[in-house]
Image 1: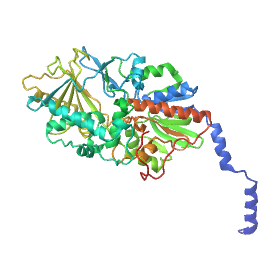
Image 2: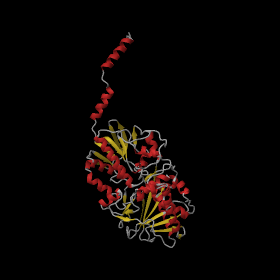
Image 3: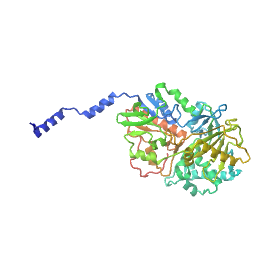
Amino acid sequence: MLRVTPLLPLLLGLVASAARLPELRPSQEILEASAVRKDATVLILGGGVAGVTAARTLHEQGIDDFIIVEARGELGGRLMSHSFGAPDRKFTVELGANWVQGTQTGNGVENPIWALAKKHNVTTRPSNYLGSISTYDDSGAFDFLETFDASVKDFTRLVATAGLLTGGRVPKRLVDLTARGGYSLTGSRPESRHQMASEYYQFDWEFGTTPEDTSWLACSWAHNYTFDPASGGFSYENLLAIDQRGFKTLIQEEAREILKPNQLRLNSTVSAIERSRHGVKVTLTDGRVLRANYALCTFSLGVLQYNDVQFIPPLPAWKEEAIHSMSMGTYTKIFVQFPEKFWFDTEMALYADYERGRYPVWQSLDHPFLLPGSGILVVTVTGDFSKRIESLPDSYVQSEVMDVLEMMFPDVDVPEPTDFYFQRWHSDPLFRGSYSNWPAAFLSEHQGNLRANVDERLWFAGEATSRRYFGYLHGAYTEGAAIGLTLAECIRGRGCLGLEHIDRVQNARPYDVM
């Protein structure tokens, strides 16, 4: 026979039992937090300039309980060198960052990348990319230097009119436009192929994308804060790295000074970052797990945009909006080695095609000041054209490059290359592009949100988070140093709120980089 328990006594008994039970969830969280062993206080995710600089900053602040987690087999990030050439004629060339852009004027501010290059004896050479140039089109050598010089003046006027050359501060009354709009307002409207190639050399070759895709104000302050001493920049000097150890030497040697073997995990690709109020858990693609109190994410903007890494819980909406509001430029250097030199004696050459951006910028590394006898030519493409060639077989791209060379040198029997190579930056899941670019729709509040930490545990740094120097190596350096210092203060103070963010971007504030 079924026995029925009276309902009221049962409920009273359950209530009494519940009153006698401890609060399981909070005590369980405390137990879990104390029981789980942490591998470090800070996990630095990415071993490029920002990551190594953050590590050095923590070290200088007396904090050495950190681990750098790097997906590749060496440190350097987008400082990537490559042994290039025929087996008996090898040279180290730079696939990524190649220049110290701006050095120092008198006793003014010094570019920290220049300081590192000097410290570690990295071999560089002055790059005369405006004064040592030859010009070509499909008829061969064709002098359009007068048009080229006009494009230099147009670019100078573009950045000056945005308000940074004289005051060092963007006027609050000025509403942003695309750089194309800025060019038009200042009277520059290139129509011929020679004019378009010349503009490309001034603009796309620096920013990795077109004037249509770039903020007028931001391109101006990034350029001027790097190059123009009157605006607080370093200098107009550009130094090309030709060190046969690789440009990466400056950051690898910096790391060697401070790192112990247990502070570095190479060949370790991050698949997921999980955060809670007790710390972070980082899962690698091989299944290994690392735990720490804090994580500093220095991945490229492109990696964040492609969701190559899973964030648990998902990043908040304000962070996602900031990530996807900025853009990632692609800058592709195509290296070609020939048995002997047959080309221009200047450092640079500019080819004007009817298609804007089709194999326009050429650099001779077989130059008395660079790598004489190397037989190496470099042609650079950017933006959508870079993405286009990444989708093509190497043989097809090589054929196109050879077609252009045959047009540039119609009286030369252009020989077959002895080596050919280019890095596919956009399709590489560790990078997804070359460096960040600020479009006109990317607002000051977006930039603040891109830089801001998420909760107390997850932090971000890289060239993309730099307001003044986005897109530049020194931007990655200054951000790594700044966030490293902030993290050190949080660790010593046993917690902090972190950087300001805005939940809802309304562009209520003026553009101000001071």
